[in-house]
Image (cartoon, rainbow, N blue to C red; front, side, top):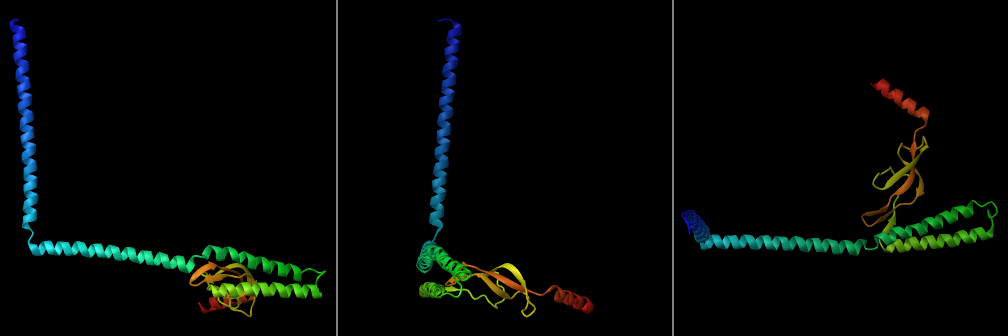
Length: 215
């Protein structure tokens, strides 16, 4: 082996020794840091007095009970809603039957061939019986029609579809019911479709003139 090769081998051994030494030092540093962290955590635990530990446990217990109570209330509310309004969708669909009965009744009454006939009277009577029976069943299940005629328009209950000139009524009063609305307990099943009164053009002009004079 010549001098050059010998020197290379010596340099390689030296570098390896340095790496091993550095790795050992790093491991020692990490171990020391871990021991310090564990020591600090132990000190923090040791710092808590029995009274403080008891208070901490009480706080955790109180939060746990509060969360359990909130979950219980949510469950109770969901159960009550399911019981009270479980048939909401079914009831809403069933209203179509009432609508069809009313449409059939109106169509028969407007039929020129059937007007004033005994057949028409008996048919209308039967349709009214069916309609009243359905309303009675609805009422037993806390579903009732919304009052509309002569009531003031309430956007929460009524939907205005048209305006009707009527000087005998205060503007915004419901004078026509196009489709009956219903409530299921305190929940709106569907709004009433209505026509509301408005002042005639001349009356409106007079009111505008009065307002202008007062200003």
